[in-house]
Length: 594
Image 1 (cartoon, one colour):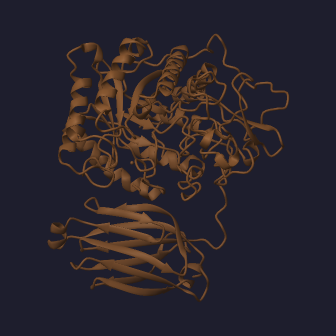
Image 2: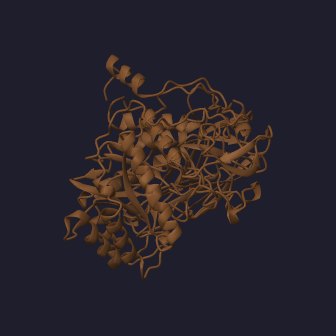
Image 3: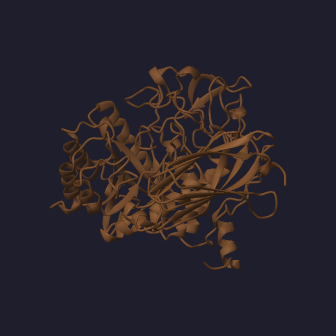
């Protein structure tokens, strides 16, 4: 997956002794929290993938059901790795391996790389030792990735195949080797894999022919679908197609339908596939990131599996919870089409080093809590499968594999997200552990858990002094209403308490909250309500908080504010808007002292 446009904002049983034993056996024990040691001067590898794979289970490749599957970019190369590209693909701009040219936002844990795998850069760790990277062209490195998947209970991946690269012979040849490396790793460690085409950057006049021709190459020449590790669903090989229907992506609905017919109903059965569509977040409403031609709805409904792309669509737990309501509606709409539903989860995201206009650590991981909230919400609504972005995506900060634990494990001279960036002291493999436990919860092997069910040994960062909790209740009979904190403080970490099932256009972005309802419902006199808990920072005694309410011309809007100076929230103000806007002050002292 490339680019941030496709990724931008907006949910059984008790532990038995047997379940506890299964959890203990299937998941690596939480290690003592420690940083990763930079590559030692002696260049001795920590771990080398063995010629004979370590003991492992074999995943059932006949179905996608109850599987959490990760995207695998495999797009990293380096000079001297033997690839036809022979350059720093995705690591650096202009093939210059220094801090000023680095494109990625995270640094992989390189402590296990063998001398033959290490790609030397011009960068160094804080202790002066050289900083190394890796190439996915190296089969040893990819084999280790699958060893990790087996070790942590991750069942497999969608290996990305970028359509825009296929006409370029050096990239085509390189991607073919990466596919074979993935196949070898999956077969050796009993994991599964499937091909995923990314249509980003393809030419609208040629992309259909390119994808059809390449799939025949995959089947006839590379013979990937003959692998015992190749993922199947409903008796057919699985193939994912990402990007059709997105704004600023190639294709019209008729071309998309042609591809559906080619893959799902090809007259030659060997080319038929169960088609997974990586679709826009707003595929159902044809808004936002989706193209608006009504014929795109026919394409979405013609797929076998829908996986809406949500990376970057939300940044807080509240937005995650609001998206849960959308997932419920999406899953019902997909079911009405006869399509299975596979939501996307991600650990956090940013895209800073390739474009410094973007925020550093734009969507913080918060020690895995952001990721787990998404996993909990998806499993709680009964989804059959999950797409996890991404195993190795350090470009846009969604990587789940081993990442530098602290700043001491990253090269100097560049901003990078480490495991402790958000104040949690975590080991480099923390997100592999989380994904393994998430997989167990999806399969029903452990109880549904709203909070992370394994210990990291990390202590959450302390709440900053001068931070106070607030509850905000917005009730409106208008078709829309907003509340903004204009001055006097800042609202952070909003959490959803409750929301009316008929509410639409819900939002929580910094100091701004929004809610709406269909205009016909508002005209009937009905109302909707949003209740949010948040934290107030930057308060000063004697300095008022200034709020602004705005709404449509129908009905009224009531804002109630509560403090948390006692064990439960206490109402301190009620303001009613009967016009379309109003600014009012609230003493900060109401939230600072009783």
